[in-house]
Image (cartoon, rainbow, N blue to C red; front, side, top):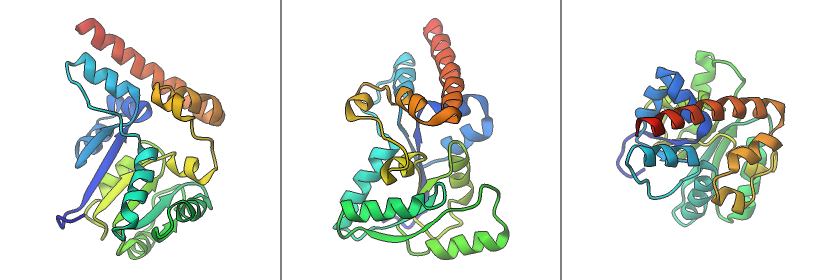
Length: 219
């Protein structure tokens, strides 16, 4: 936020990793970020198979809470973009309750389609002056959106964090801390997120598991 540049960060869990492995445009978006953090256990395992040791996981939902707490005394202004209708508003209210003094620059729930030029201009106006723009459009749409809009918006940092909006607004249950610690949050989300999430997680976990097996055989 201090260097005058425009940045976006990615949090890579199994769903995003599966899209990175299949879609060059998603891989390009992730590789174009200022930094990509290992959100899920799959990326930690893949790094280990390739001879690297990542120091720790940095889950997007946890990072959102850390940044809100850290930013209160610094006057950081947060904008929440995405989620189902009403979710961003409930998220902002819950975070303001949890972190007294938190500054919310605004919220916006876009339609599930490409925005018109007029709507794009309206978004740019709404977010002007925010320090952090949190994005929840679903993976990999949110990472592609951040890559496309980085530098076009008057916001120093864009952060796609997906389901964090649902978890912290109370729209969906967040996995208990012990489940997150052992790296099984993907399984918790698979069985609590409804049929669509179940099917998506089965698909992405299968793709990632196959890739991990291939890496293990190469080793």
